Length: 528
Ligand SMILES: NC(=O)C1=CN([C@@H]2O[C@H](COP(=O)(O)OP(=O)(O)OC[C@H]3O[C@@H](n4cnc5c(N)ncnc54)[C@H](O)[C@@H]3O)[C@@H](O)[C@H]2O)C=CC1
Ligand SMILES: O=C(O)C(=O)COP(=O)(O)O
Image 1: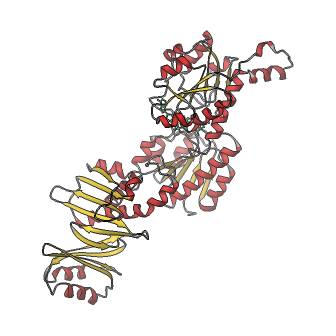
Image 2: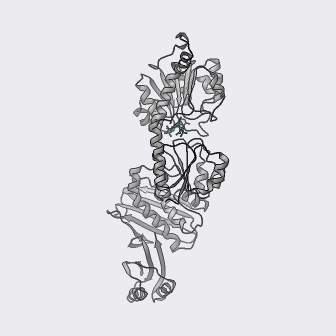
Image 3: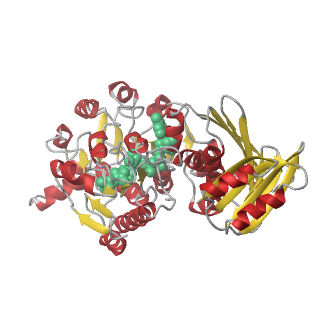
């Protein structure tokens, strides 16, 4: 893949770069100017960034070759994921690689701010010795309010419990079980948490809902002398409100790793002695950066090879192990989708997919996407892939429905059924995987079959009477086309032949097949 070019616009670990260089043409341009990046982005197949590079509409629209954006880190608020999705650009991040470091940095900022560590350090190194101004408070026995009990929030909870803190948490999007697992008392509203906490630490993503979620009104609800930490994203705690609350003494101390505007210079928060700040260092440890760098390099390489990438943010999330189980079903669903436009010439209004048996317990969203990718790939000039297939289907007015049933259907251990509707009639297909993981189409419009969806298949309908199949197969033989597999099934006086052949069926042969007496319809399906 040395003809594939990747540009890395921020510092990543050498180990990651080495992996990339072994497979791709790598342009390592840490700190490249925006103007230059905009100029040259059109030359690259992949872009790797951290939190500084703004991957917005302007940049993405110029990245006409881009297939993948890799975020070497966790937060994706610097990436316009929709802009990427519309263009079929995969966006992947490394969500688990730097969480420990971010959790530890949270604890470091908290301890440092409540014990005046940074300030005392500067004081002593400045040639002074005095202990009076630096009396701190213990964490022991304090109530810590965690806003957002996700990956990092939960790690902070576990660590602070060992300090003897009482943990309360507010996170409306997680189950009660998760609160229990991390020993956090659930608060149903942010207000409840704010009123009870001695220390507040935020660990939500930055988005429209969370930006400014702790402002003037919310800080006023807090206990006098509350302490706050923000190691998530600048602005989740409104900076102006925080300045006022520090000035009034409502907030006794703050530990901040992130700022509304970064890089941050002359931020008014820097003026407070009781505020400890770091320049977005949460993920900056040797271990985290090594993990992040290697992880994003692996994913970008997989993405450019056309393989499914584990941490794609613009696809349903699947675990690596799940992906292994799903892979053969993905191939089956894609093959089923690809049959429609090879059999019908009418636009699709609606697709109903059914997943029954073992497969019903899996992340079938990915199978729906695979089906749609197969459906649309053959007929659209735009690039269709797993990332944009759903959007492209919606844009074409195709309504998609999914149904799951974990009981066996028609005796199959697993079965995918598809009903594809157009104005006039519909096409119904069902497919399954054998125990050995081989995909088969087992039903087409009520005809039982066992079509192996690979290579070239001639699908014909004919009168169910003697003297039709013979001339049909003879016509193939006389054209030098070898039959590798064949299945005939019948329904209501009609036969369906599914004939797998080893070589292409040219137009002349197709015309001859169609002219065989008793043959009603012949179509040639090509599978990848
Ligand atoms: N300072 C640094 O260098 C680093 C910062 N981060 C940031 O830390 C933050 C947390 O990251 P993760 O724990 O990995 O994310 P996560 O996605 O695992 O967890 C976020 C949690 O916030 C919850 N949440 C969402 N909206 C909420 C709301 N309105 N109110 C309460 N809870 C809400 C979600 O349900 C979820 O449980 C992110 O903003 C991320 O960008 C991550 C790594 C390093
Ligand atoms: O991973 C995250 O969300 C971080 O905030 C770390 O950002 P960075 O990669 O250090 O610029």
